[in-house]
Amino acid sequence: MMQFSRKHRRFIVPMNAMSDVAFLLLIFIMLVALINYRKEVHIDYPEAVESVRRVSDKKNLELWIDKSGGIYLDGTESSLVEIENTIEELYRTAPDTRIHVIADRDVPFVNVNAVLEILQLLEYRVVTFVVRESGRLKASS
Image 1 (tube, rainbow, N blue to C red):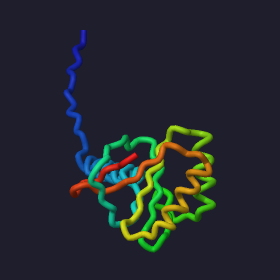
Image 2: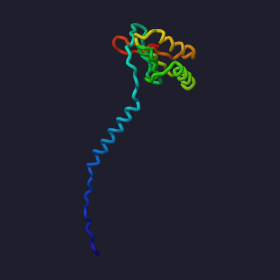
Image 3: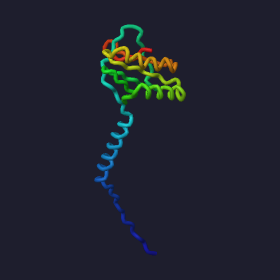
Image 4: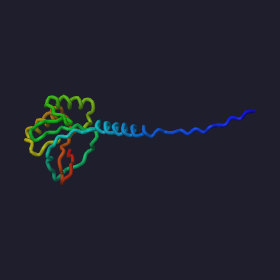
């Protein structure tokens, strides 16, 4: 009977591909982080002393009103008609969504009132005014 000898083979893992995998993983993480990017409009928040409470930040629609009276819907500049249509659609599909009205402290009230008239016309009741209290941001319902 003939006996065969087994040769032990060494498996070598190529390490030069590991840097490519790490680089691709880093690119993937950076792209995923940009998906949840929140657009904000730079405003100076009004201040409140009393009756301020924190609300949930889930299921929000943000209406920003800057100093010049520009109105932004979730960071994108919009007209009053577009805002009305969006809120009307939102009321039909998800009526428990909270609308955050975030207005600059120097904005004329007529601009805030235009948004409030739309909300009143549509009878939207889940509205929050975002203000600053003692250096921290709060939302007041």
